[in-house]
Image (cartoon, rainbow, N blue to C red; front, side, top):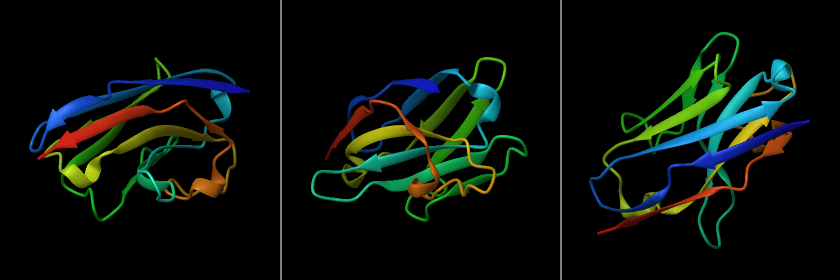
Length: 125
């Protein structure tokens, strides 16, 4: 069992920045993929950035490449998402996901076992 708590969301103007954090606790030794997903009202949850925790290899959705940076602090079992150059279309509830599946893909939501409660990001134009 893993429990994760996201923080760092907020309301910003377009062009601004935020840093999201996800602190994990529990069975953290089996985390193979960690990722950030978002869900806007009326839309499906989509993966925006993910990481293979063992290799550190990262994946990004095309819509966020060059603006979002995912990183991990293994000592703290914490996942981060640095978001720059925010756009109104980035407005969504952002979730941290953790997968205990060895064959996971970092951006595939169905591969994830655990989800946080989400942190809201709102971008105004």
